[in-house]
Amino acid sequence: MIDLRSDTLTRPTEAMRQAMARAEVGDDVYGEDPAVRALEERVAGLFGHEAALFTPTGSMANVLAVGSLVRPGQEVICESSAHIARAELGAHATIGGVTMRTWTGQRGRLDLPAVRRMFAPDMGPFFVPTAAVSVENTHNFAGGAVLPIEDLRDLREWADGVGAGVHLDGARLWNAHVATGTPLVEYGAIATVLAVCLSKGLGAPVGSLMVGGRDAVDEARVRRKRMGGGMRQAGILAAGGLHALDHHVDRLAEDHEHARLLAEACGLDPAEVDTNIVVVERSDATEFVTRAGEEGVRVSVVGPTTVRMVTHLDVSRADAERAAAVLARL
Ligand SMILES: *Cc1c(COP(=O)(O)O)cnc(C)c1O
Image (cartoon, rainbow, N blue to C red; front, side):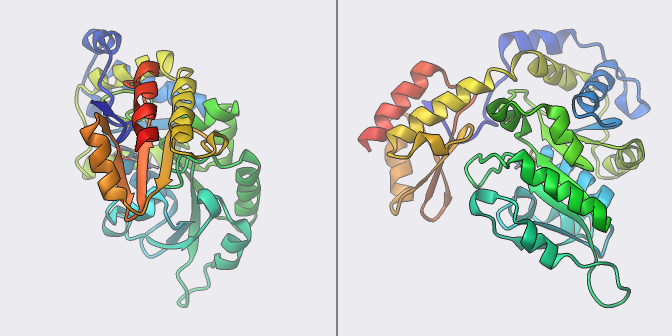
C-alpha cells in the first residue's frame, strides 16, 4: 500500500531510532533535558528568535503562540480555511477565549486590503479588538501553497504600524523554505511568534515547537504545563527532531518532485503544485478514493468533491511512479 493520506504517517527511520535511543535525557519540566534544550535553542536560532518551546503537537504550539498575542475576548484574523480555524476543533476559543474573523484568499493567500478593512483597534466597550493576524505557510487546505515572502513582509510592516501581532502557522514552513530558497530566518523575521512541526514532512514521530520572544515563551511554558503538556524525558522525542533537522530538510525537494508527478498523472498543471500536497477536484471523490485504495494507493477526501494526496519520506520515487500510474488510469 502506498499511503498518500498525509505526511504525518511517516515512521522514524532506523537512523532516527538510533539517535532517539542514544538521546541524553532529563526531566524537562525541571528544565533539565539536554536534548530538548538543544532542540529549542537550535530552532529558535534558525528563525532568529530568542526562544522556543517543544510541544507534543502543532495544535498545542499554535494555541500557545496565538495565545501569546491574543488575550481572552480579543480576536485573531486568519484565512477562512486556515488550520487554526478549521482543524483545531475550536481550541483557540475553548482554551484561549479567542474569537476569529476570516478572509478568503485565493489558494490561501494573504489579502492585506481585506485584513486592513477588518482590523478593529481597541476602542473600549464596543468592538472585539484585533490583536493579531495569522498566516499559514505552506497552506494545508489550499494544497500546500506557498505564501510569497513579499506579501508576508507587507503584512508585518502594516501590523507593526497598527500594533498587531503576526502569528505564522509554519507546520510545513520547511517545505516553503526548500521550495523557494527563502532562508528560514527571513520567515522568522515576519512573525512575532510562530509554530513549526517536526512530525510532518520532517518525519519525526512526535513534536512541534512554538518560537518567539523570551517572555512569550516563558509564559507559554507555564500554559503548556497547565494544559497537560509538560513532558518529562522528552529528549527521546527531541532527538528525533534534531536528527530530522540534520537529515530530512533538503530532501523535501524530492517530495515536491513526487507531488508534481502525481499532479501530472491527475491531469493537473504540475507547475501549480508548490510543495508536497496535491488537491484534485472530483465529483466522485469518495468513489475515487475507494477505487484508488483497491489498487494499492491510499488518498483522502478533504471535502465533498476534494481529494488530497501528500508525498513524504516513506514514499520513494518508485512508489510515486506506481501511484501516478494508478491515478492516471482512474
Ligand atoms: C498538521 C498541522 C498543524 C498541527 O497539527 P497537529 O496534528 O496538532 O500536530 C498545524 N497547522 C497546519 C497547517 C497543519 O497542517
